[in-house]
Amino acid sequence: MKVPLRDRYVVIAWLAWLWAVGNALYVYLVLGSARMFRLESAVFIFVGVLLPLVVWRPPQCAQPTTLTPAPNRVLMLIAVSLWLVALVPFLTLPFLSDDYVFLASYRHWSNVFGVAHFFRPTFAGVFLVLATVGRGSAVPFHVVALVIHGTSAWLVYVLARRLFQRADAAVLCFAMFLLNPLQLEAVLWASGLQELLWTLFVLASVVVYTGSRLLSPLRLMCTILLLACGLLSKETAVSSILLLPAADWVYFKMKRGSLLAAAYLGFAVTAAVYLFVRARVTPVEPEFFVMPGAYFAKQFIGMPYKFFVQPWNLTAANVPAVILCAATVATLVVACWAVVGGAGPLVLAGPAVILISTLPVLQLLLRRVRPPRHPIYLFCCDWLGSVGGTTADDGSFPSTVVRRRTRHHHRGFVCVLTGQRQAVAHGW
Image (cartoon, rainbow, N blue to C red; front, side, top):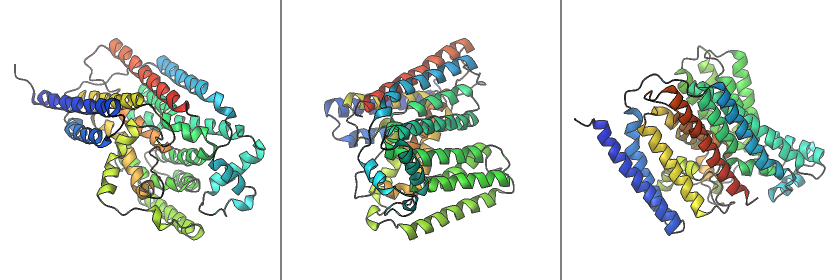
């Protein structure tokens, strides 16, 4: 019997996977995280081999709904419970490092617009209110941080439900955003409130913007208002400028009605006005930028890899090499399994979110005056696209088997993320 050409190519993909996994084990467990270039090169080769299989899919049947509402609710409840059990004990965590700088800077409402090197009035106003309510306690900051993060997780659920048209995939995305170790620095650190705020506003703007195929003036105005609130929370919200047009293509294939051109004009004007005002209030120093070059391109292309396999701030958390290795191997397994199984272009949604939202701020991420901080809170969303795509079923299993397999699959991801989060939280 003749072996199909795709099956022959899959063998090459698995060999590339073995090479990448072998390098991960060697770099982390033998070399102690030294010579990372070996692992990165192996992963780039693996991804290059895997890319043709994204569009070269096997014949598939219609996908059944793999989980009923009851298991979906159970999974969501488990995720929320694990999250609260892990983070509620940190409600008494005191102020740290930069918190005292902001406490000293934002004492009166007149300081909201007048602090040097910062133009984040939304963050400043919220910080001032919480500092006044807390009277020296960090508890109000932590409570608000939990509420904002939980709200953002729900917005991720809404976006994933619209993207995949499946509740089970959306619930998995909700759980992964809620439990991702990346969120610890933003949620547990009072100064991380700025990350929570701008991400909340950006996610809310995308939810509002994609709520209906035809754009209306009211929907457009609400989107621009939320976008402006995000920009006034932190400069990094400018990354959303490219996310909104990307959402037009992914959700509606650019068929949004007669107001689409007006929407893009409104986004451009909002960004231009913000950048103009910010440059007048507090310009960015030239040394914060790097010139585009080979290093620039390498870092840009490698962004998705770093965020998927290192969902924590390596400069702030002393993560054991075993966990780093396990995260890398698990990511490689999921990626190969999903693409070879025929998940299709949806597995690229996560890396696309990273690359699209990184491009407008990449130079700031590569600034020379400080070591690069890999984790950016918004990139918890990158998991929703790629991992949600792994829930695709090829229709070759009975529905009861698929439901059982998917249920264990989802709970397995929740357990892995919980373990990763606990390992990083130990440093706090």
